[in-house]
Image (tube, rainbow, N blue to C red; front, top):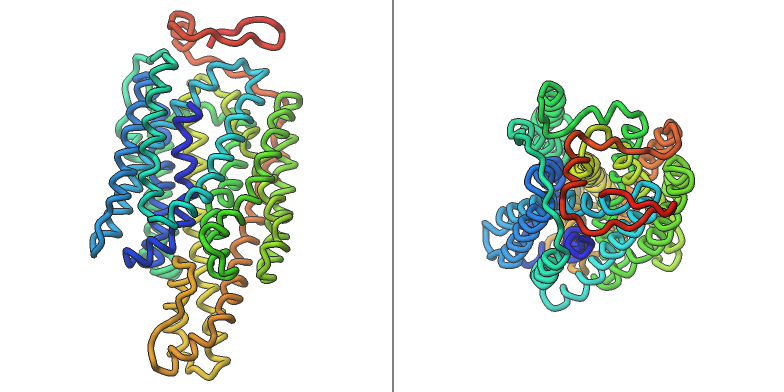
Length: 526
């Protein structure tokens, strides 16, 4: 299962490093490139709940296989995007179907892993799972930098051999297909997908439409209204898409909220840090990948430490430590961005990664352990929906902040060089759109005074972009600070899941693989 989900983790970060080359070859706009990244994450958020539910209804093995096939076929089509006017739409569509495949695959795979381990050993098991997954996410930038030097299309094609091996291992594992004899809530699936899609559209387009635009707020408020309707609709269903009774547990709700605010920073940081490295630090894609590797050095170590703390004392301790460490790390990192030195920044990059590492596995595992009347696939679908919706919102909101601040800074730089304010605004918008989606060394072309001044100002523009990124990274620190205020409200202790009706009988009668004994020497049913 770890091998099967590796593709989904790698693809969360691999595209960020290749973004400049994709923009250059296909002629995408900065907002279009952001949607190439955002479409995958939004699709994950929209369909994770559906994926978890389908795993329960049709069996995890079948859903893992279907999800893998959807993912790899979409990957091939992303790599085959034609040049021309349709390129941007093509890439966004098949990045979204990639996200659908991952949303089907991940909850089913994680539900299998969770079922194998008794609750007293689950913290370390899932810490290992999320720790290795984090390492695989770290491979994304490294692999992306290497493959991009050949062709950026290879970042999608590399999923083909991984998928083949994953399918072979899935067959060899002989995973039992336990099912629940219940109906699928199609209306709920549509409501949650529409609500998330429309609300994130509003956040993302705010950079273009403006925060004073009626369309922006119509999307945001309308999307949230649909999500509220989804919540109300699900409460009256006999077999809902999402079993909302899990939110009656205060600890589960705290876990979900901490994950939400932590994920506002976790996935977006790959995109923003990668583009910052290539624009402000003039780094190559490979060097940008190494820059991100510092983050995962801290993440990998802290995730294992956090897993052991979870098994011994519960999730409250590691979540409090993680939110504090992460908030401090991101704040110190933001303060150092204008030094334009990778060497000066790495301790703070690693500290920020350690904060996320302390949070991720304990919060996710504790949420699963506290499932009340819901299956592991269903609860995993809920937590992953929260995580990926937050990542989509984080990319949209922080991207808006970055574009706005970059434009303001560049206007100030150009007007100080004698360019009229009207002309400076137009040039600044063009530069801001270019650097936020195209981190390379190309300078503005043209022979007019504005183009000449823009070329001469490029060293200052790199600093302008670094200063704009400070707002983004301080925003990430604030998100983790809010997560700390929520984490302190966790009731503490270790959750003990209540098996949903019908699951215990299915577990006892299915031909499952042998389950490892618990620490007390007793064997526990999957």
